[in-house]
Length: 291
Image (cartoon, rainbow, N blue to C red; front, side):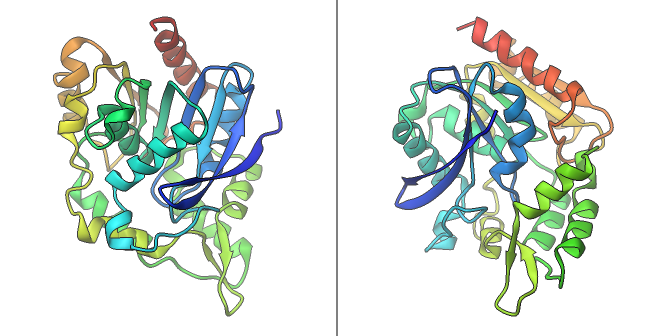
C-alpha cells in the first residue's frame, strides 16, 4: 500500500506525518525515537495498513517537521504531548492505539496518562513501549546525549549510511534497502555541501534543561490501559529491574502490563521482521478485542 505524505499544524508548528491504510479503520499512532523520523515506522506501518489507519509523525525538530523556535521550552515531553493532542484533533482521531519507540514510547505514556493533556485521557486504547520505560539508565542517556547533541558531518551519503549502520546496530537486522531508506529519510545538507543527520541538534536541550524529563513513573502509574513493553534483550537503556517494577505498579498492578524480551536487539528493536510483527499484531488484536 502506498502511504500519503501529509502536513498539519499542531501547537503552532507545521508537523509532517505519513498516513497508511483506510481512513475509517482503527487508528494506530506509530511514533519514532529521539533522533529519528516517522519513516522508521514504514515496515511496521506497511504490515498493519490492511487492518489499521497508521499515522507516523515526525516529531518537532525531526524529519520534515518544523524546528522549535524556543528549544529550551519546547523540546520536552509536555510540549510533545501538546503537539500530539492537536494531532488527534486535526486528524479527527477519537481513539487510537499507540506504538512508540524509545522517546515515542515516553510521549505515548505522558499522553495516555492525561496529566499533561487531560483531553487525551481515555483516547489512547493501548500502549506498546518499544524499549522504553518510566525510568531509563543514566549512563545510556549520557551516551545518547553525547552523540545526539553533536551530529557528525560527512562528504557523502554513503559515509553517513556507514555511520548510521554503526550507531543503530542495536536495532537488529535491517535489509540493505531499509538501511538506505533510514539514511535517505534522515539526511540534510549543510551550507558547505556536506551531509549530516536531519534533526535539530538543539533537541538535546531536553536533557540539559529538563534533566528528569524521562522519569515518568507518575504518568505510568496513572495508566489504566493494556501496556506491552518490548525490551531489547541487549538494551543498555531499559534494564530488567525497571521492567520488573513496571509489572508491580500502575497497569502492572492491575494485570494490564506485560514485558517481552526481544532477542538479537539492543536499543531499540526495529519492528521490521515477522517476529516483531507477530508481537505487535497479537497485542493490538487483544487490545482492540477488549474494547
